[in-house]
Length: 268
Image (cartoon, rainbow, N blue to C red; front, top):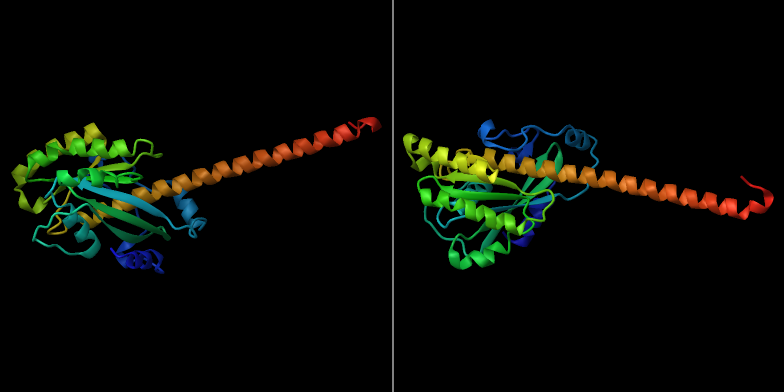
């Protein structure tokens, strides 16, 4: 995406109607997530008071996984409402920016689409850092791509091991439209088992038909937003405490100085 287009999207007056979010997006299945399912009360209060609307909020999402699993198609389906059946591998890294208004607060997400080819892996991994959300994609019709997801996740988490808070992690089964119901049931059992092992949230999607794609990214954006606001609340609280400590210390110093200067007049 050209830099000027990115800036215009981030700074426009309000998000598109389908990016204006007032309710919490639930997971695909409540049993397949380790994450929250409602807005934190502090976040709702903070946003209602409008105390953070002057800050430009941005979160980084990385999309990783084997070559050919449909990472670019997934991003294009969400960002451009398009699907191209002519496969073209990503070279290096590409990214999109999407603007949301969540609880009335402007929020932007950078979606980094990384190459799955081995020869680009070292280049792509340099873009993993500072991720707020890690999305690992596999092909529901190719079990070997699911087997590789654990390694993809471990590599991404290694680049973000000092992140506080740690990034949200998602396991996405793409090409839902291409598998039979009986085959899907078997694959889902294995996918859910992996999400429990890597503590991720599971979603099955179809970039071709659009099934679950918008809901997935809305949830990703909401979780990233909530984390960002909670960090801001925490930082604001700590700053107030430090300012209070400083004022208290200055007051004590002034009292001591006054006592020292007035000792000759029996000041107490």
